[in-house]
Image (cartoon, rainbow, N blue to C red; front, top):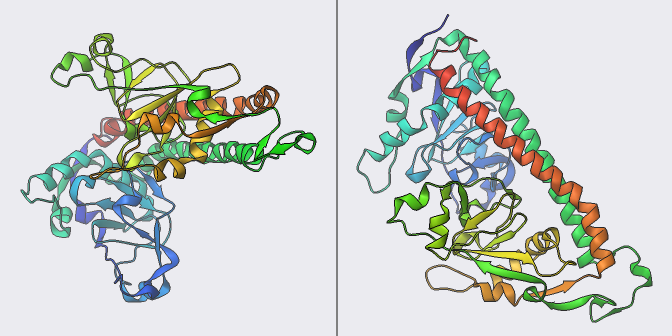
Length: 402
């Protein structure tokens, strides 16, 4: 049986608006319970596994009516974050910017999560239409929204179908995290603690092993910054060349970009086409020090600094892990009135030690398979997300039998 019914958000379950414990009382914080705020969530977040802030048993006693159980669906209802949505992984508290649906039937939890995601733009439209300086959807407005949904008996199965994709994506992300950690640990072991193969037989003077080169980034890597094609020429943004912005530097490989540009856009701007395995590092604002590795030839905006090996001994894996390890040092050199920035010159002049050819070759041979696997997992997740997003509207419309 296919088709749809109309449902109120308030009929999906109990709607609970969160509360922030008094920040004057230290006894409420650094406890065993998650305290979820919009900054802990992203759009299509799936499960919320970790929060920046935690609260205590005292906070639970004080705000027992605002605590929500595991498998509740949290939906951000304020500002530009309207639509950030996640499922609670455990008993937790949210702040007042989040309305949570506690399902009457736990089997409907995942369906409700995908249902709200499907109608995210509807909710954003409601929040933005209010005319307030800060868009907001209060509990009453949120609860009263009416939407079309498949017949209710289909909800658990629809939730199971769609969550199969997100379970795989989440598992891949955990594998990516473990691989990244193993790479960073090897880098630190060899190049920070200097416990590289054969270190027992190598003399070290002033922190530099014999046969290694001491210098700055520009001694070993060519650098360049990107550019932004004119926004007045809309045709510049109709191509198939990836154009990377700093918000897309999230450590790891960059497989795709939000915007694409044309060859004409590159010819008529300071943007440049960088080769595969170029390492990008963000130079402006809150993203300073964030990195990414190009998985395809791409251009970037001027807020990115690109690093490309200048000599055979250097490689992209070493540059990437070097920047990850020295992120705090780069941030420490930032300056600016409105927002902190670093320049390409600061990146170029940052101190760097280049290992001997033998050690670098061993290092690359050890980690090259790891980075190939990282890329494969990221590409697989993109395919899974695409498949899920194609299936979602077809299931929600009632047009696909389950």
